[in-house]
Image (cartoon, rainbow, N blue to C red; front, side):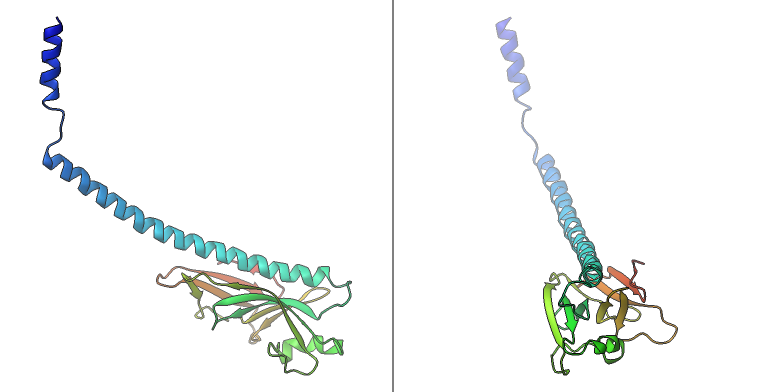
Length: 198
């Protein structure tokens, strides 16, 4: 009985290996699957980065709006808070803008604009946070009515969109896109400060 068991083991062990064709087939399939996975994961990672940046930018706009309302009764009160899109440096920032000596100038921001250089007499432009875009993203300036500034004047808050929108236009846009892919996200900001994501 022991002898027949060992003979059976010897017979079975002769076919224990793989043929060269089987090994090549397994290696080929593994290479194809791993290549597809790498390409998919890179694309998925870029799309996730785009979605995360859209969310961060939207939250910063809403935070500027909240600051304009929350700090209205706390001295010193700036004219308001906003975000600036820097198309050249590929970043965006949260800022406050003020005319400490002449608060009446605050209401003319929608006409005169916002001076980031500090050359406008009596103006103070103060940056709180700067957020650079990830290297895989860039701004999309082909969106309708691209915005440089979204600014909120307390107490309402009144929304100032710059550059100023033309007559009959009720919203401006901020566009984000992947550098080497046609995938983009758009944040639309209305004149009353509401955000939408078409």
